[in-house]
Each structure stands twice: as C-alpha cells, then as structure tokens.
Length: 463
Ligand SMILES: [Zn+2]
Image (cartoon, rainbow, N blue to C red; front, top):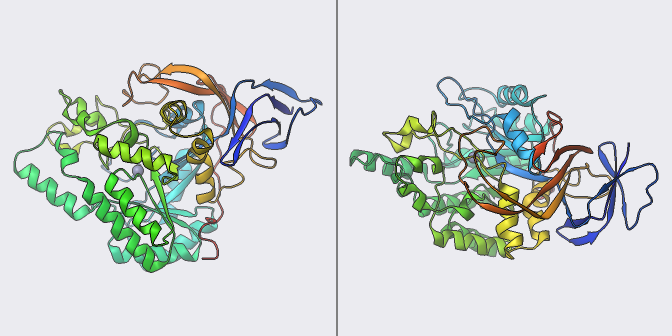
C-alpha cells in the first residue's frame, strides 16, 4: 500500500518547503502541496523535518583482517541497527583486504559478512593496501561491480603504501572515474615518536596524542594533495581533525585544486584532555587521528559553518572497554584504536549544529547525506527526497530530547564517548526504501539492508 507523508518540511541543500510525499514500493512517486489521499495510508509528519536518509561515509563494521586481528565488537548485524534506528539509512564501510590477497577476496568477505545481516543499506570503500602490477586491473573490476571509491593509508605499517604507490593508484582510480580517500598521517614519524616515548618509559594512553601531533596530519595532507595534483585527480581527505590541516586544504583550494573533506563528530565534541582521565578510562577515547585541542575544535566548527567540510562520517570502530581496550593497558600503542559513533552522529550534529544555531537545516542535510551521495556516485538514488529517488526518509522531530547513554544505546559496545550528553532533535520515524524500519529510536523491521552498487563519482567524470 502506498504511503502519503503529510505536513512535513522537506529539506535539501537548496532549501526547505512543506510538501506531501507519496511513497509507493521502494520509491518516492509524487511530491506536492496538498496531494489527494487516493488509496494511500496517511503518515502525519506535522511539525517535523523530512530529511533524506543519512549516509555515514566512514564505518568499520568488520575488521576481519586475518589471523591475529582483534575484531570489532559492533559488527554489521548490530551496528546497522544502531545506525538505522537513529536515521542513518546507508553506511559506507571500509573493506580491508589481507596482505597478499586480492580485492575480490576482500569483497567476497565483506559481502558474506553483511548480506542478509544488515539493517540499513550499505556499500564499501575498497582499501588498496599494497601496489602491484595487476592492481589497476583489480580497481577496474571493482568499479564494474559498483565499488567506485577506494581507501588508502599513509600511516599503519600493515596498511600504508608509499607515495609512488599512491600515485599509481590515483592513475588507476582516475581511469575509472572513482573517488580516493586517504588516512593522512606521516607513518614514519608516528613510528619514530612512539619508539622515542616507549624507550623513555612512557606507556600511558596520554602519550597517544603526543606521538601523533597535528603537524603530522597536516604534512601528510600536503603531500597527498601534491600527489593528487600530479595525477590531476580530485580527492577526499578522511577524518580531517586539525586546524593546520584545514589551512592546507584552504591553500590547495585557492590554487584551484578540487579537494573534498570528511570529518567526524568526535573532532567537534571531544578534546585531548580526555586522555588525562585516570584508571585507564582514557583508553575509551583512543582513536587515530587522536582527539585534538579546543582550538582545533573551534577551527573545525568555523570550517563547517563556512562550508569547507563536505561530509560527516563517524569512523565507527567499536571495541569494548572491559575486554578489548584493556589489551593496551601497559602500552598505549597496543590499545585498539577506534570509538563507536554510527548511532549518535545525527543527534549530535543536529543538537550543536542546527539547534545550536551554527548551521542551517540545509547545511545539515548536505553534511549528513546529500554531499556524500554526489561525491560517491549514489545521487539521486540516495541523498535527496525527490520523485524517483529511493524512499529513504527520516521524519525528524526537532522537539525530541534525549540523553546519550551506554545503558540505552543499541551499539554492541560497553561504553559511549558521549555519556550523559543531552540532545535536541531525533528521528521519529525512519523509512528505508519505503518501509518503516524504525520509530522513536527502536528498530521495527531488521535485516532489510541491501548492497548499493554505485556509479562513477560525478566529480571525476570526464576529467
Ligand atoms: Zn577509519
């Protein structure tokens, strides 16, 4: 039966307007003022915003990366419930191959771990962790299967590729009109600093940010953008976290370079004083890049307000405090890095951003959904409420109030970095391809997620 959502205010980056939205099957079939009911069931969205389903550009819902790897506590079956119940209808998960294995092997693994187990739609960024002669062919094969974005690392010895390998990958990605995102930190210097501090007997979590200072991110971004300029490829920076990095991006854009920036809520709400907490509590906040200083947070908010940040991901990568983070009790470099976040992104960004008067609902939609759909080849299937698009709709109640707590969260992890945070605004109902899958933070219908094959990035088309 068709649904007619009445009385809500539809928001896109172009503006907001009170419109009725008719859904039939998986699609939005009609929009307009005072649409006739016909045989549709009425959904009352009076006083609510209608946002396009949120897209999380950066999750780790699996780390199935070979023997000896610690896996995340919150995998596709649970993390996707936490996502969709709060408005995220599509996640872009980081698929990471094992060394020496093909990208296809990795895709097979990620398909197996997600298929029929995921409650929101999903797609993958494929990681390229080594460069070899046939990698260009493999990238082409991935793009043909709808995996048109790729991830690389400049830090982590088991994942990083040297500058010439990154350059080769860029040429291959350019050939398929794909999108590259890189984790930017100078890996050699992170290693050197870690060795230096460990040798001096500094083992506590508070040395984590000290061994990954701002300038190591800014330098890596500068180098990344230099390689991208050489390859003439528009590129994405994942989880940008510092003031200095934003300045590097500004300079590159001023030169005419096309650069996309992703950041994450943790770099807007949490700062590095949390690494001074006693009793190893600080381990909860270990992630890379690390939490930064209040001055960085202020700079990021300014960047967000100015439209310098394109997308908000979460880098959702959940490890339990009690039995997983504790592995690094005697050595901060051994603490599994990452924090949960997929569940709280919408409420946090709406609270401080929109309710806090820093950004408009239109900007919020851009950051949470629309920009990602454009950048990663999903528009207009995703990222917009318009006739013909997937009926992924968040009926958002701007008056709802909640308090974030590990006791009530859906993510399968024993803490939240936002314990006690009061939020304003919440997803009242969530529609995934036309089905009401969640209401007031509770899942109604699970495992409805599908793999989304994506087209070329429109920014790299005809480059
Ligand atoms: Zn990540």
